[in-house]
Amino acid sequence: MSETGLLGPRAVRRIAAELELRPTKQRGQNFVIDPNTVRRIVSLSGVTADDVVLEIGPGLGSLTLGLLDVARAVTVVEIEERLAQRLGQTVAERLGQDAADRLAVVTADAMRVMELPGEDPTAVVANLPYNVSVPVLLHLLARFPGWSKGLVMVQLEVADRLVAPPGNKTYGVPSAKMAWYASATRVGTVPPKVFWPVPNVESGLVRIERRDPPVTDVPREKVFAVIDAAFGQRRKMLRAALAPLIGSAADTARVIEAAGVDPQARGEVLDITQFAAIASAWVGSTP
Ligand code: SAM
Image (cartoon, rainbow, N blue to C red):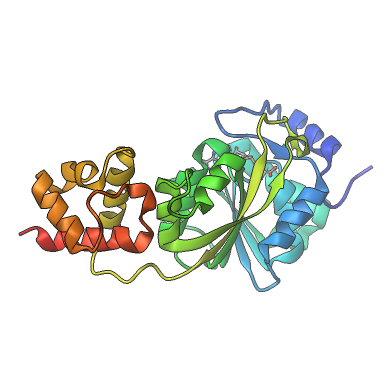
Protein backbone atom coordinates (compact mmCIF):
# COMPACT_ATOMS: atom_id res chain seq x y z
CA MET A 1 0.00 0.00 0.00
CA SER A 2 1.46 3.38 -0.92
CA GLU A 3 1.33 5.99 1.82
CA THR A 4 0.74 9.68 1.27
CA GLY A 5 1.35 12.87 3.23
CA LEU A 6 3.83 13.53 6.02
CA LEU A 7 6.33 10.91 7.16
CA GLY A 8 5.70 8.91 10.31
CA PRO A 9 8.10 6.55 12.13
CA ARG A 10 7.48 3.58 9.86
CA ALA A 11 8.01 5.53 6.64
CA VAL A 12 11.20 7.13 7.97
CA ARG A 13 12.66 3.75 8.88
CA ARG A 14 11.55 2.16 5.64
CA ILE A 15 13.19 4.82 3.45
CA ALA A 16 16.34 4.79 5.62
CA ALA A 17 16.54 0.98 5.30
CA GLU A 18 16.05 1.17 1.56
CA LEU A 19 18.96 3.65 1.35
CA GLU A 20 21.02 1.54 3.78
CA LEU A 21 21.38 4.70 5.81
CA ARG A 22 22.83 4.50 9.30
CA PRO A 23 22.35 7.98 10.75
CA THR A 24 25.59 9.56 11.96
CA LYS A 25 26.26 12.06 14.73
CA GLN A 26 28.97 13.63 12.64
CA ARG A 27 26.33 14.81 10.18
CA GLY A 28 23.82 15.63 12.89
CA GLN A 29 21.34 13.13 11.47
CA ASN A 30 18.28 13.03 13.71
CA PHE A 31 15.19 12.71 11.57
CA VAL A 32 11.77 13.95 12.62
CA ILE A 33 9.30 11.05 12.79
CA ASP A 34 6.34 12.99 14.15
CA PRO A 35 3.96 14.74 11.69
CA ASN A 36 2.62 17.01 14.46
CA THR A 37 6.09 18.43 15.07
CA VAL A 38 6.43 19.14 11.35
CA ARG A 39 3.04 20.91 11.32
CA ARG A 40 4.07 22.93 14.35
CA ILE A 41 7.36 24.05 12.78
CA VAL A 42 5.66 25.01 9.51
CA SER A 43 2.96 26.92 11.34
CA LEU A 44 5.44 28.79 13.60
CA SER A 45 7.55 29.69 10.56
CA GLY A 46 4.78 31.90 9.20
CA VAL A 47 5.53 30.61 5.69
CA THR A 48 2.71 31.29 3.20
CA ALA A 49 1.92 30.45 -0.42
CA ASP A 50 3.95 33.54 -1.42
CA ASP A 51 7.18 32.18 0.01
CA VAL A 52 10.14 30.46 -1.57
CA VAL A 53 11.69 28.49 1.28
CA LEU A 54 15.30 27.45 1.70
CA GLU A 55 15.64 24.30 3.80
CA ILE A 56 19.02 23.03 4.96
CA GLY A 57 19.50 19.32 5.51
CA PRO A 58 16.19 17.86 4.28
CA GLY A 59 17.31 14.34 5.20
CA LEU A 60 14.51 11.92 4.37
CA GLY A 61 12.09 14.76 3.67
CA SER A 62 10.06 15.02 6.90
CA LEU A 63 10.03 18.81 6.97
CA THR A 64 10.30 19.26 3.20
CA LEU A 65 6.89 17.63 2.73
CA GLY A 66 5.32 19.94 5.31
CA LEU A 67 6.88 22.99 3.66
CA LEU A 68 5.74 21.99 0.17
CA ASP A 69 2.19 21.76 1.51
CA VAL A 70 2.28 25.50 2.16
CA ALA A 71 5.06 27.29 0.25
CA ARG A 72 5.19 28.21 -3.42
CA ALA A 73 8.57 26.52 -3.84
CA VAL A 74 11.23 24.88 -1.71
CA THR A 75 14.98 24.72 -2.34
CA VAL A 76 16.94 22.25 -0.24
CA VAL A 77 20.67 21.91 0.40
CA GLU A 78 21.74 18.44 1.55
CA ILE A 79 25.31 17.28 1.97
CA GLU A 80 24.63 13.55 1.68
CA GLU A 81 24.19 12.48 -1.90
CA ARG A 82 21.93 9.47 -1.44
CA LEU A 83 19.52 11.57 0.67
CA ALA A 84 19.52 14.37 -1.90
CA GLN A 85 18.92 11.90 -4.73
CA ARG A 86 16.00 10.16 -3.07
CA LEU A 87 14.09 13.30 -2.08
CA GLY A 88 12.31 14.01 -5.39
CA GLN A 89 10.91 10.47 -5.43
CA THR A 90 9.65 10.74 -1.85
CA VAL A 91 7.93 14.03 -2.61
CA ALA A 92 6.37 12.74 -5.84
CA GLU A 93 5.11 9.60 -4.10
CA ARG A 94 3.64 11.35 -1.09
CA LEU A 95 2.47 14.70 -2.46
CA GLY A 96 2.32 14.21 -6.22
CA GLN A 97 4.35 15.38 -9.18
CA ASP A 98 3.12 18.97 -8.85
CA ALA A 99 4.89 19.22 -5.49
CA ALA A 100 8.01 17.53 -6.83
CA ASP A 101 8.11 20.16 -9.60
CA ARG A 102 8.21 22.90 -6.95
CA LEU A 103 11.25 21.35 -5.27
CA ALA A 104 14.87 22.16 -6.17
CA VAL A 105 17.59 19.96 -4.69
CA VAL A 106 21.19 21.08 -4.25
CA THR A 107 23.79 18.56 -3.11
CA ALA A 108 26.31 20.68 -1.21
CA ASP A 109 27.75 21.67 2.14
CA ALA A 110 25.45 24.41 3.44
CA MET A 111 28.39 26.15 5.11
CA ARG A 112 29.92 26.73 1.71
CA VAL A 113 27.03 26.97 -0.73
CA MET A 114 27.41 30.15 -2.78
CA GLU A 115 24.55 29.90 -5.28
CA LEU A 116 21.03 28.58 -5.36
CA PRO A 117 18.90 27.64 -8.34
CA GLY A 118 15.61 29.37 -9.13
CA GLU A 119 14.12 32.30 -7.30
CA ASP A 120 15.86 33.84 -4.29
CA PRO A 121 14.51 32.41 -1.03
CA THR A 122 12.20 34.59 1.04
CA ALA A 123 12.41 32.36 4.14
CA VAL A 124 14.67 29.76 5.77
CA VAL A 125 13.14 26.84 7.65
CA ALA A 126 15.34 23.99 8.85
CA ASN A 127 16.05 21.31 11.37
CA LEU A 128 19.73 22.22 11.30
CA PRO A 129 22.52 19.66 11.63
CA TYR A 130 23.41 20.25 15.26
CA ASN A 131 27.17 20.36 15.15
CA VAL A 132 27.28 23.09 12.48
CA SER A 133 24.05 24.96 13.13
CA VAL A 134 25.60 28.34 14.03
CA PRO A 135 28.12 28.56 11.15
CA VAL A 136 25.44 27.40 8.68
CA LEU A 137 23.01 30.03 9.92
CA LEU A 138 25.59 32.84 9.84
CA HIS A 139 26.64 31.82 6.33
CA LEU A 140 23.03 31.87 5.07
CA LEU A 141 22.43 35.29 6.63
CA ALA A 142 25.58 36.73 5.04
CA ARG A 143 25.42 35.06 1.64
CA PHE A 144 21.69 35.24 0.84
CA PRO A 145 20.50 38.62 2.06
CA GLY A 146 17.04 38.38 0.44
CA TRP A 147 15.29 36.19 3.00
CA SER A 148 13.48 38.03 5.73
CA LYS A 149 12.07 35.40 8.07
CA GLY A 150 13.12 32.04 9.39
CA LEU A 151 12.42 29.26 11.84
CA VAL A 152 15.22 26.92 12.82
CA MET A 153 15.39 23.96 15.13
CA VAL A 154 18.69 23.67 17.00
CA GLN A 155 19.90 22.18 20.29
CA LEU A 156 18.18 23.96 23.14
CA GLU A 157 21.49 25.25 24.46
CA VAL A 158 22.32 26.73 21.05
CA ALA A 159 18.84 28.26 20.83
CA ASP A 160 19.49 30.03 24.13
CA ARG A 161 22.80 31.35 22.89
CA LEU A 162 21.30 32.65 19.65
CA VAL A 163 18.59 34.64 21.41
CA ALA A 164 20.47 35.83 24.54
CA PRO A 165 20.54 39.59 25.18
CA PRO A 166 23.68 41.41 26.45
CA GLY A 167 24.37 40.71 30.10
CA ASN A 168 22.85 37.24 29.98
CA LYS A 169 25.24 34.43 30.93
CA THR A 170 24.71 32.71 27.57
CA TYR A 171 25.31 35.90 25.57
CA GLY A 172 28.32 35.35 23.31
CA VAL A 173 29.61 35.35 19.74
CA PRO A 174 26.51 33.68 18.21
CA SER A 175 24.15 36.10 19.99
CA ALA A 176 26.10 39.23 19.02
CA LYS A 177 26.59 38.18 15.38
CA MET A 178 22.97 37.12 15.09
CA ALA A 179 21.93 40.54 16.40
CA TRP A 180 23.82 42.16 13.51
CA TYR A 181 21.40 40.60 11.04
CA ALA A 182 18.20 39.86 12.82
CA SER A 183 16.13 39.59 15.93
CA ALA A 184 15.89 36.04 17.24
CA THR A 185 13.26 34.69 19.61
CA ARG A 186 12.83 31.27 21.18
CA VAL A 187 9.32 30.16 20.31
CA GLY A 188 9.25 26.60 21.58
CA THR A 189 11.00 23.45 22.68
CA VAL A 190 10.91 20.01 21.11
CA PRO A 191 11.39 16.75 23.05
CA PRO A 192 13.94 14.11 21.95
CA LYS A 193 11.26 11.48 21.31
CA VAL A 194 10.09 13.03 18.03
CA PHE A 195 13.40 12.12 16.39
CA TRP A 196 15.00 8.97 15.09
CA PRO A 197 17.53 8.24 16.38
CA VAL A 198 16.58 9.83 19.72
CA PRO A 199 19.14 12.53 20.65
CA ASN A 200 20.14 13.01 24.28
CA VAL A 201 19.21 16.68 24.40
CA GLU A 202 16.10 18.78 23.91
CA SER A 203 15.78 21.04 20.90
CA GLY A 204 14.67 24.63 20.66
CA LEU A 205 12.77 26.51 17.97
CA VAL A 206 14.15 29.93 17.08
CA ARG A 207 12.26 32.46 15.01
CA ILE A 208 14.40 34.86 13.03
CA GLU A 209 13.26 38.22 11.71
CA ARG A 210 15.77 40.04 9.62
CA ARG A 211 16.32 43.73 10.19
CA ASP A 212 18.79 46.34 8.99
CA PRO A 213 22.24 46.07 10.58
CA PRO A 214 23.37 48.99 12.76
CA VAL A 215 24.34 52.07 10.80
CA THR A 216 28.14 52.15 10.65
CA ASP A 217 30.94 53.26 8.35
CA VAL A 218 32.89 49.99 8.62
CA PRO A 219 32.34 46.62 6.95
CA ARG A 220 30.73 43.76 8.88
CA GLU A 221 34.04 41.85 8.97
CA LYS A 222 35.61 44.53 11.19
CA VAL A 223 32.69 44.46 13.61
CA PHE A 224 32.85 40.65 13.73
CA ALA A 225 36.61 40.79 14.38
CA VAL A 226 35.92 42.97 17.44
CA ILE A 227 33.21 40.53 18.63
CA ASP A 228 35.54 37.52 18.19
CA ALA A 229 38.33 39.26 20.13
CA ALA A 230 36.03 40.48 22.90
CA PHE A 231 34.68 36.98 23.58
CA GLY A 232 37.97 35.19 22.83
CA GLN A 233 39.04 36.34 26.27
CA ARG A 234 35.67 36.54 27.88
CA ARG A 235 36.85 37.15 31.40
CA LYS A 236 39.13 40.00 30.49
CA MET A 237 38.16 43.64 30.38
CA LEU A 238 37.77 45.01 26.88
CA ARG A 239 40.99 47.04 27.06
CA ALA A 240 42.95 43.77 27.51
CA ALA A 241 40.80 41.51 25.33
CA LEU A 242 40.92 43.86 22.33
CA ALA A 243 44.62 44.76 22.62
CA PRO A 244 45.80 41.92 20.31
CA LEU A 245 43.53 43.41 17.64
CA ILE A 246 44.04 47.12 18.19
CA GLY A 247 47.53 47.70 19.59
CA SER A 248 49.02 48.82 22.88
CA ALA A 249 46.91 48.85 26.04
CA ALA A 250 46.83 52.67 25.94
CA ASP A 251 45.76 52.82 22.27
CA THR A 252 43.12 50.18 22.88
CA ALA A 253 41.67 52.06 25.84
CA ARG A 254 41.60 55.27 23.76
CA VAL A 255 39.75 53.58 20.91
CA ILE A 256 37.17 52.04 23.25
CA GLU A 257 36.62 55.38 24.98
CA ALA A 258 36.28 57.14 21.63
CA ALA A 259 33.43 54.72 20.95
CA GLY A 260 31.70 55.83 24.14
CA VAL A 261 32.31 52.50 25.89
CA ASP A 262 34.01 51.90 29.26
CA PRO A 263 37.38 50.14 28.59
CA GLN A 264 36.94 48.27 31.87
CA ALA A 265 33.67 46.68 30.73
CA ARG A 266 33.56 43.08 29.46
CA GLY A 267 32.33 42.06 26.03
CA GLU A 268 29.34 40.25 27.49
CA VAL A 269 27.57 43.52 28.34
CA LEU A 270 27.93 45.18 24.92
CA ASP A 271 25.15 45.27 22.37
CA ILE A 272 25.77 45.09 18.63
CA THR A 273 25.65 48.87 18.21
CA GLN A 274 28.49 49.25 20.74
CA PHE A 275 30.59 46.58 18.98
CA ALA A 276 30.02 48.49 15.73
CA ALA A 277 31.03 51.77 17.42
CA ILE A 278 34.30 50.23 18.68
CA ALA A 279 35.04 48.82 15.21
CA SER A 280 34.46 52.25 13.70
CA ALA A 281 36.73 53.98 16.24
CA TRP A 282 39.40 51.30 15.66
CA VAL A 283 39.36 51.65 11.86
CA GLY A 284 39.25 55.46 12.19
CA SER A 285 42.34 55.37 14.47
CA THR A 286 44.53 53.40 12.05
CA PRO A 287 46.65 55.57 9.76
N1 SAM B 1 15.24 17.87 7.93
C1 SAM B 1 15.31 16.48 8.33
C2 SAM B 1 14.33 16.20 9.43
O1 SAM B 1 13.92 17.16 10.08
O2 SAM B 1 14.00 15.04 9.65
C3 SAM B 1 16.73 16.07 8.75
C4 SAM B 1 17.38 16.95 9.78
S1 SAM B 1 18.90 16.31 10.40
C5 SAM B 1 18.93 17.11 11.99
C6 SAM B 1 20.17 17.24 9.56
C7 SAM B 1 20.36 16.98 8.06
O3 SAM B 1 21.39 17.85 7.58
C8 SAM B 1 20.77 15.59 7.66
O4 SAM B 1 20.02 15.16 6.57
C9 SAM B 1 22.26 15.72 7.26
O5 SAM B 1 22.67 14.78 6.29
C10 SAM B 1 22.29 17.14 6.73
N2 SAM B 1 23.59 17.83 6.85
C11 SAM B 1 24.55 17.66 7.78
N3 SAM B 1 25.57 18.52 7.58
C12 SAM B 1 25.22 19.28 6.50
C13 SAM B 1 25.85 20.35 5.81
N4 SAM B 1 27.05 20.82 6.19
N5 SAM B 1 25.22 20.88 4.73
C14 SAM B 1 24.00 20.41 4.34
N6 SAM B 1 23.36 19.41 4.96
C15 SAM B 1 23.95 18.85 6.02
